Image (cartoon, rainbow, N blue to C red):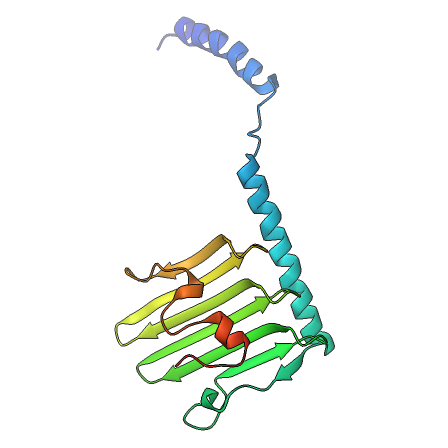
Length: 174
């Protein structure tokens, strides 16, 4: 390229670059749906933090679970903690066998609604699912992250062998 052509090209590009650098950029405004989802996720985070704070401060007490919730070594598979009003706020379920496992941790709000859940399961074929799910106050799923094997696409609250409402009441679903 000759010097004159390079100079002309540079002279043409400089005003365009300067205009682009000084022109105000339009920021994408979030939609009403995105705003509502963000608000719901913030509410879930607050509820979960409140339950964790209650657990750290001793504000949650263990709830008696059914006798069928003990494993082979008589180790409890299910642990439920309730607040001062008796509302289950934290549920942990773990079942481990040599060829499969299942775990669930659920955080509930003061009204007893599932707001945040972590669940995983594996079988002799490997990992079935490992997901974290958030729910709004109406019980609608607002976010989910993690992995699922093909065919395990049901909502966490309806997975086979896992019933958060029964677990919350201290009943295992083996």
